[in-house]
Amino acid sequence: MNKIIVIGGGPAGMLAAVSASGDNTKVILLEKNDKLGKKLFITGKGRCNITNSADTSVIMKNIMTNTKFMYSALEAYDNTDICRDIESEGCRIKEERGGRMFPVSDHSSDVIKALSNMLDKAGVEVRLRSEVKKLEKTESGFDVFFSSGKKENADAVIIATGGVSYAATGSTGDGFEFAKAFGHTVTDLKPSLVPLVTSDGWCKDLQGLSLKNSGLKMYSAGKLIYEDFGEMMFTHFGVTGPMILSASSYYYKRKSDDVTIHLDLKPALSEDVLDERILREIADNHEKHFVNMLPALLPAKMVPVIARMSGIEEHKKCCDIKKEERKKLVHLLKDLEIHITGTRGFEEAIITKGGISVKEVSPKTMMSKIADGLFFAGEALDLDALTGGFNLQIAWSTGFLAGRSCREYLTGKGELS
Image (cartoon, rainbow, N blue to C red; front, side):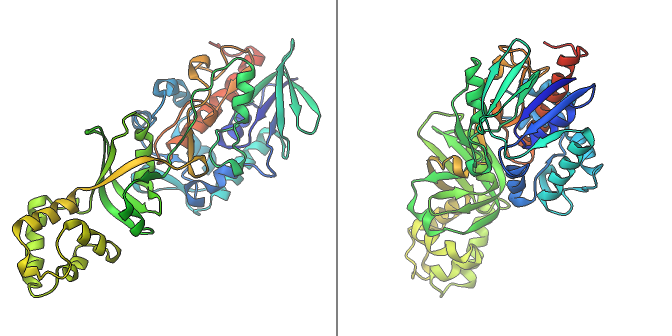
């Protein structure tokens, strides 16, 4: 009987173990934590954004790094496949804004339970609290050395150990060290889908304020590199929220230090229409102070900040506001500029940008081009995507393909390249 060891009990590892089973093959799934799916449990704020309902072509557009590498994996196992398999285990799925797919229960634990059921039915042996310290190639396969001092042999190994974000969940970069020991290249690792740091002191004044239905544009050296519409939040260090996390992926696409975000606080109104709206507010409040007019246009927390930035004296009567001052206010509401100086660290990043170079991995099988019988899946690879379920789809697709290919490699049923 062939033996496959899968290292890492996250989404990629669990699906790899399931798809590797069968054909007289024993599959052992190793997880160093005391439970499976520890990082999966906290994704989507504990709700688990399983995947996205978009067509494969759209999913590909949302993959930021090494997009073409994912063709075969998505063809082998796509978003409809993972939804079908999870629902077959009793976890119903719903679609939300932007094609995001969540469990109806809004509990990520139900997704993990479904995956655990799949592992049980596939006959996978799950070993928790099993930390791997080293891998070595042998004539017949691999030796897997544990931190406990024990050793286990395997005919093939699948590395699905994740990246280095949220280290408390077990993502401590072990797989990168295993891969490097076999001669693999690990590209530069950076935090991604991560909050952004700003140099604007006023952002701190707005700490805790969330904006919904706002427009966002990101520029690098004056060139538009990303735009979005949705939600964001101000923090003590800068900005975060769904739009910002996606923008962080584009932040790395430019080396320029001159990166700015421009917020449109009134995206439904053109500058001319907004100007007319402000003129009406002035007419209705002509004897009131300028600062007392602003709550009709802005969240209360933003009023003193915008009043200060507008250059209009707070206690100036509305009827005394000049045309140039009004025009400046309009522009401020339509184009609020924020200066980006960097990102927060891995401890706040949803994913790791960078990883095991895909140039050294077969996209058709996920097998190493350097060490036969060694396969990779998930975030350990140099693959990353925007928010919306796309990163988990990378994990599902590469995990499934790695598992199936590994089994076929050992049984001689697959055409490996």
